[in-house]
Length: 591
Image (cartoon, rainbow, N blue to C red; front, side):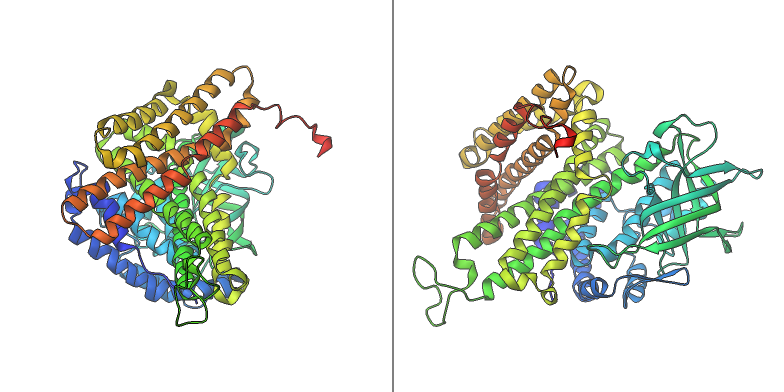
């Protein structure tokens, strides 16, 4: 069975050496001293190791079963979910007015990494609830917030979001679900939604569905849809549960991975719904949930890779195979451990440098969200809006790639289900698809985010990179290994952006055919910036007498990323500059 241990030391490094949270002016950050955050991560790690990791294989093997309209979750899930509730893990960063603990979003994200690494499918139940909570918190009436949020904070009631329909996924303008106004101010919701994670299950007393639907009078396409709260059980004025609503699960999907997460077809047959936010402005409210979910999915990308990496390292240390080319490393044994071989080291360094860079990037993104929400920082809001498709798209593409690399370290044994490595690969695969497939994330980045507010956010990103390079140019420890590669990558990304701006109007295909390359360029540049910042922080900690072995390993891992992965920006630029001719050359009939 695979093992997992929370990377507490690395999380602490990101929060306290890189982000310097306890010195930040963000409200609530002054409470995040190293002793407090370390205690939270250690305790979350115990929950992950002792409770969630053993259930990961159980969920994968048993899956979820639909019986008489109720989805039965895998053995042990109900007890584990109850333990998570009782431990307060569902309410870390929720509003104290509704029973939450009021910690910054950053802490919720960091703990979510630990739980996602241990059991991605299980963590989705509370993760989706948090997204629905956020949407109601931001757009609900006071009465709606009072009715739903306390129970959702505690996860006595869980939440979902219902967008996709059989005929439409990304193109939500094709939506057919209808919302008919009723005399009492409610709406009758009728239609079918598919791929609804946690749409039906036995972990909570009630499920609060957030459903996109068309109400009369809305404009055609996506601009005319509205968002509705549709509870599984209607709620009485006193807060008790009332009649069963007309919403049922018609099917549980059999999927490639995340078998422990109930993915349902949901049928609405005149179900009672209540408008959330403004009429015909449903996407505005839904994006509150979707943007949070996209950062969470980007987090899943590297979190699963972290778990797979830990097991690849353990196997590479134990498995004896062949001899080191430089001489026997294990002369007393019949062969040397896999980890002595250069190509195995290359694979493990690929995984390690990605995971640690992605962790820093994601938690920096969570920090930007805190600055936006807690300080009203418009620049932080613009920056995280720009980078959200990069966090989601790049990190899930690479997270899947690294899970496959970890499986490869195991050789044939990685292909055997009993060893658990294939589950990491299968689970990681969905992250590239849901919450907006990665090709759509790339189109969003190039087609919308680059030109956002006249290009100010992307120019601010370039200025931030340039300022870091300039401010640290006098440090010889950083210059050759970190600053010069970062400068080259920055120039490549800027050249690609200028290329798009120069060609998009006259040849939009040229820009969009290079969108995935640009997404990956941005991803590499962001991880390069994180590695340069982490190297600076590690050198400072070394100068202060910090943990030498840990800090020197951090710097060596950063050097690896800068020399072996960051140069990929040049390849992506070369592809982008070829334009659309080769991409669009074949007529559709020729495929």
